[in-house]
Image (tube, rainbow, N blue to C red):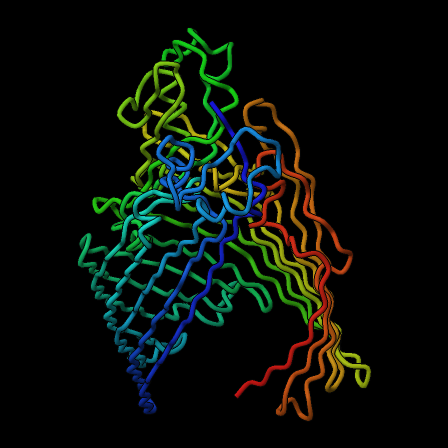
Amino acid sequence: DVRRRFVELGPRRQTNSSDTYRMVLSYNYYTEAMNLEVALQLNRTDAEQAFVNTISQSRTAQAISANCNAPCVPLNLFGRSGTITPQMLDFIAVNSKIDGKSTLSGIMINADWRVAEWSAGTVSVSAGLEYRNERLRIEPDAAITNADLIGGVSRAAVVGARDIVETYAEIYLPLIKDRRWVRMLDAQVAVRFSRYSDFGYEINPRLVISYVPTAGTTIRMSTSFGFRAPTLLQLFSGEILSFEQWNDPCSIAQNVNVLVGCTQQSDATLTQFLTATGGNPQLDPERSRSLSIGILRTHQWRHSTAEVSVDWFHIRQRDVVDSAAQLFINNNAQNGTFADRISRDSNGNITRIQANLLNVGSRNVAGFDFSASWKRQMGTLGTLTIAVDATHIASFKDKFSSNSPSEEKAGTFSDEASGGMGALPDWKSNLSIAWQQEFWQVHYHIHHVSDLQETIPLLGTDRTIGSWRSHNANLSYLGPRTQWFRLTFGVNNLLDDTPPFSAAAFNDSYDARTYDITGRYFFLKVDKSF
């Protein structure tokens, strides 16, 4: 075969632009015993995704055929870099775009009122009703619809709509107050009923308990059921064709005739494969159960206040929506399953992967949230605040089906462009130091991401992505009595820290979704709140 990168054309560019319009009209009615709010919302987003410096497959085929007559310009693929002329490029190059439009409209009614007075406090109820209409339309041009872009994406038009009706109620119950070892004990019980026109209804309850044994100490617990409805794009998107990076176990010589699905060695130099993805109108919503338990401690001195909190959380999801292309490849190689999703040619090379969205297995996530702050009033010198926030993912386990083993992903990186979960660092933390004196405010912020483990594609060996920190600082002037304007001058990524190298990142050498890739930059901002 012949493989050539069209460097003469310049880099492929993708430009995304969108205009969003939002209007909310609300009416509020207040009495001593009740609050009533009625709101109408209208949202619309118009978007365009433009692709520049892409190659037409049909014109390239014509340019290298024996039937290339004017205005066709014959294409020479066998010369060195720079031998493809501007005239050749003018004939095969094509620009394309995708237009999209989404709307959300609805009405919301909410009421809060006090229903009883107990010895421990006031029993209050909140209830509401909400109606929403969602619409989505995506219109690719002919080059994209007809799969005519080499190295580009192919997708069909998308049209989808649905109606959503939700009603909810919540009651606050003050149970005990000012007893021995119980300064306060209260509970909140809530339930939400949701009806979607495209998949049915859901009922999800929630319970929150707050216990204050002594002044300054709060122990809290919450448990709830939840769900996430598939998006209109996940439900109604047509087939999308693209060349994605995957690992084929059959390209490793040691696996041939050892793994059931590897009867011959595939070409190890092939790393991008034609992948067909798309929506699935039969998707079920993702459902979850969550539990969190935490403690909050607050202490005050004459001029200082300190606050520390620790919360443990556990979230269990099922019917997770995913395309699972790499999983199909692995299972096809290991035991010959998913033959309807993995196509190979006579040489054993993958020619097509069918990876439409589906509901797969379950996911379990557990960890801790930490927060600590200290505020010091220094009289005429102003106020100093130091705060630390951190999240620790202790476990992040994925399970494709009830028969498959769980896979621990906490502390790992696998590129989303290759079907992975992206970066799941064990630790993410923020340290902020702020000083405010009358109209002036100084803020210094440090963001930290712990190191990650990744698997190098094709080699199958593991390596470590180093930890990363970003330093940001800004100075703000708040204006007379903070009523006029806020003027802020700042610098982000003060030390110009580059993102750590990743061997598994697709199309680049770093994870642009986790790290700041812009380098050091200065900014000046003026804003006014009305």
